[in-house]
Picture 1 (tube, rainbow, N blue to C red):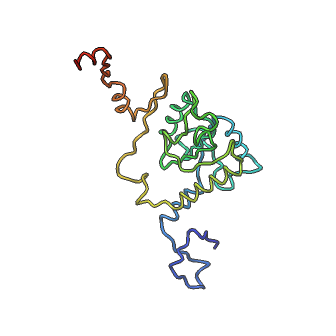
Picture 2 (picture 1 turned 90 degrees about the vertical axis):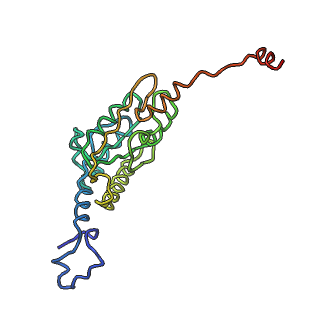
Picture 3 (picture 1 turned 120 degrees about the vertical axis):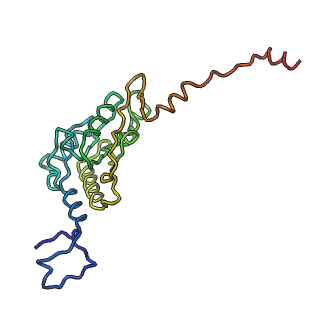
Length: 221
């Protein structure tokens, strides 16, 4: 029996005559091993990075070898969001809605410099300087655009992270219900509802009192 090395517990000594028939592991290791080899990315793209993502799924690179070939068109059936491309302020509310609709546990990969930090459009009037400003990111992939090999490396890195998760410490398995991320409001600029108190404070400051020079001189007299 060919047992994956990550499933074995080397601290447990198994007699040599039983090593081909018996293995000792934990429920947590089996659970994480199964999840890491059945990650289902969500099928959507934003800009030129999406072309590289399509190439990674095609026959030449074929990430189905790693158990990721099931790209789902519905967020209800996906557990990996690959943010592939430039995140504009107009598209951001829709990305947040898709993230909230994904099933738990869920993970996010920021593919390329635009998704990671705004890229060449950083500080632009219509581009968000990094998707991690609004949703948590697990893996960042550099490049403009990244190669299919870079995306494969990012997906393998995510697999390794899933294998190291502990059920007792993971935020997915707490008794408290999960909270959705508030959808940003698109106006003259993007508004994060989580910062509404700060926005209110800044926009309702009392008007400063301006003292004219002549008035100040009169007070001195």
